[in-house]
Length: 152
Ligand SMILES: [Zn+2]
Ligand SMILES: [Zn+2]
Image (cartoon, rainbow, N blue to C red; front, side, top):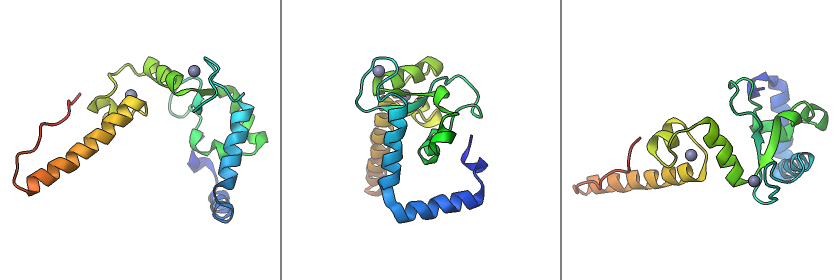
């Protein structure tokens, strides 16, 4: 299910409703979703820093549940998706992603080409952006740029 499959009128309604009610609903519905999913990591039972994940990541993009707007669905609509999703702690989220995408994390390819969301790749992106900014500054000052971060 993608955002495009929500009719424009419904999208407009959601937008206006959200505008009026702020983040309260978002937070409340996220909590409700976590509760429905048992409030713990499906692998180890951890209860902190949980995120909602697709159970099966090895399916085509169309079959993946679009997690970004699950919070906006009614309980009735959510029911259809619950069997396909679960909660994971950061460690098991990372493990699950590594299993289906066996590239080296913390390098340019994974961080930018594969847009991996694991901690290592997030950190790489942050450092890389910082370095690029610095290098631009060096260049402006007529200095030699520092050597780049490893690519691939
Ligand atoms: Zn876990
Ligand atoms: Zn990664």
